[in-house]
Length: 265
Ligand code: SF4
Image 1 (tube, protein in one colour):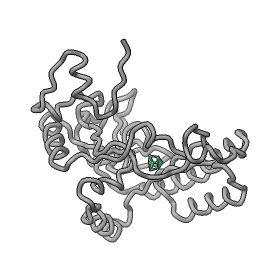
Image 2 (cartoon, protein in one colour):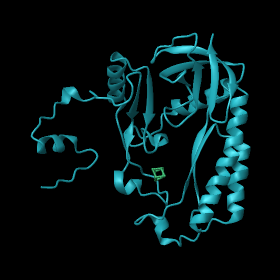
Image 3 (cartoon, helix red, strand yellow):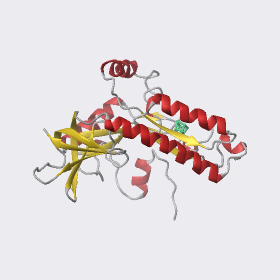
Image 4 (cartoon, protein in one colour):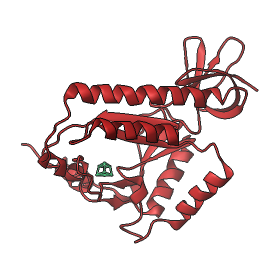
């Protein structure tokens, strides 16, 4: 027999499988990442009306996890060896609005402070190419915007015409080949920005979390980089040993478009 469960139906799912829901085990996790880092979902769903997106239809309205629950989950993970927590959500900027009725003003103050005190703070964004009606001029505006802001990380997707979204009412008029060209054009601009940003890191020292050894290199990440999708720091394994899960100070000696090379200091 088939059953359907919503994203928040864990107690019902367990009951259907004949298991007990034990409240005291909430927060217990079997993590599938290496032990030294873990993803922590701070909320589920989304209340935004982005016309191209089907996520609110699939995941439901935004529900934040209470801070106390997040803190105890974080403590539990830390006690088991997690050193880096990556907070994720469909819309992390909306966190707290549903249960606390305000964004944590403190977060905004903190971001302002970061910008003031850390000019090198890493900014990231994701864009869409080929939204219905997007003209060549619109595309050029996007390129100019990216050049002006110089995001540290940028991803871009081709617009996909999803049923039941608001945008599905529009005519999907940008041909697939044009969408691909626009994605490629944006990525080419971002590559040169990324290369210049990386080049500016040569000679500087960063705190690097070592993830693994691969071939002749230990591989880690700076605090601005997420696993699997961002830059990595490669350290030649010839004369050094670096433990996976440890923080090490690394001086950057050379840089490519998406990776950095360095030595321990
Ligand atoms: S998940 Fe992101 S893109 Fe989708 S509606 Fe929410 S904010 Fe918009």
